Amino acid sequence: MFLFYVDESGTPEIPGVSGHFVLAAIGIPVDKWTRCDKQINQLKTSYSLSDAEIHVGWMVRHYKEQEDIENFEKMTPAERREAVTTMREKIIQKRKSEGKDCKQYKKNYAQTKDYVHLTHYERMRFLQELSCLVGTWEFARIFAEVIDKEEYYPPKPALDPEIQSFEQIVIRIEKYLEVISNRKGRGKRRGLIIHDNNPSVAQQHTKKMNSYHKKGTFLTGVHHIIETPLFVDSTLTGMVQIADLCAYALKRYAENNEDALLRPLLPRIDRIGSELAGVRHYTSRKYCKCFFCHPNSLPKQIFRNKRKRQ
Image (cartoon, rainbow, N blue to C red; front, side, top):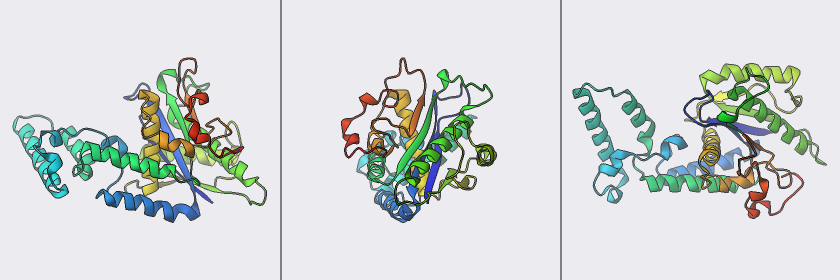
């Protein structure tokens, strides 16, 4: 039995506020869950993040309040948190006294309050260590659909990036489970999809999964994935936070060619020979030079111990 945790990065709306939309899944055997969860919690605890949700998009930002506090790096974590909280409260009060809107400020502060005891360098170091940790999980597999929205011209215009991505994820997971089930001496492998609880997509994905069970996808039937997706609170589920890390790393690479977080994850992407079959970059391959459009550009070390299918 495999558990496949799913999360997204970017917005599916076209044009929206992001150039790419990414839906990513990371799958682990159910008997490895305890080990993975323990390792995630140990790393989070070492950075005083044990009760925090790891939301990569908010962690990588620069917090101006930290930069404005003198000798911030020399403070203890408790002193840093108190200093940032005090400064943020003053900023809100000042904006209120000037009759300015505070809504966006309050939202930003709420999203980042769990990380203010860490400098930007420390937050980036934590994320790098987390990515490297996931990279050591030889039993894990990553799947994703990376859509360049400027190049998105689906055969069915009504097929938005959200649904297109979900179907592609289902196909890749189904094919992977089929392949490993057919290996000699192994029984049929089953998979369960566990999704971050996004109310705007929960109903859509549930209906689609019911349809795939009855009619199949456009490419394959669904015989190894059971049930409809389970939707969970990402603040309480460490593995969904890892899916967020995977989606963010893929999006930053596709949009900005930033690969610091992605490179440790490359060995975990499902592959056939030298092809990273687990991820598709939906874009114009004529111009794109990324790992997924041009596998020859991949770092050679990820092909050590290469098998027919990883």
